[in-house]
Length: 362
Ligand code: PMP
Image 1 (cartoon, rainbow, N blue to C red):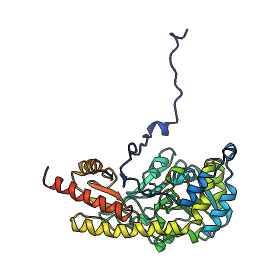
Image 2: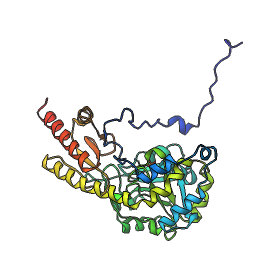
Image 3: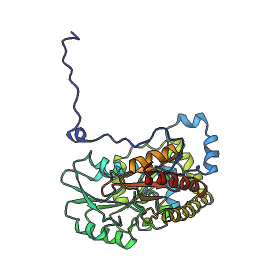
Image 4: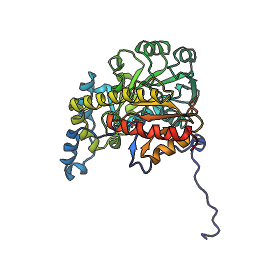
């Protein structure tokens, strides 16, 4: 019987069949990690203490996000109902898109930008409308405004944006929110701490503004997977229908209050990165490497045709960097995360050696 049975495999939705599986280039990252814009040192010691004190009994219970959402909301000056914790900003993006995008809708994006917007949009029936930045990779404000149509349902803007670290001003973001009242404006403030500009205070004021933040970058908790959505209650109540009640695990929930309380640690790390960014940019200028002005914890540099070899040789020298050549308009460009001054001095030595070898053709 078994031999004669034809194999029938259930088919996924057509949209899913057309999707690509997204594989971030992780794997063997024991060197200096300047490739994923994470904190390159550690999280707050207060988080470490909390983790050490978690009992096995605590792990037997389902996580309860409500009380921690109230703490985070108070920290942000928002009402508890305006904040939802998520399994990283990635889940926040996923939930937002699943809630609002359907056939005929358009997702408007300035590109290059964070890859996961397109990945999550590709599982919906919406169309992605990408607005290419000019060679300076500055925020393409006027062209983005011109691309708003009655079908625009979400405008997603990472601010600062990746991979260049460019920013949209508060006035520009407000203008977009005002000119597209029928669309949700997502402002993804994953790198907010390194720039200081925010529109979080406008959540609930601008009726279509949604802000996302992550604890993966400055806070050093990428492994715990913690992000948040802040939105007016009228939008949030729809997103809560889509959001899993248990997607933020109890270890992450326990660690969030001490991470927020330890302002001193966060301050130290951010100041260290900003000082290191200044030194690193000066070293790039001295080495005649074109760079884009960045307000985040990374810098995009022009390497040219030997970009892949550059990334490979840097890895051999113990420094991981991220080749962004396949991003739209980024051929030959590599993104380098900024760590501490000590780490970046090590990176500069490696960079100068690798560039010398590439330039001399060795
Ligand atoms: N948004 C932007 C702009 C990012 O660059 C990243 C991570 N690289 C994320 C969101 C993802 O954050 P999380 O780790 O919280 O999912």
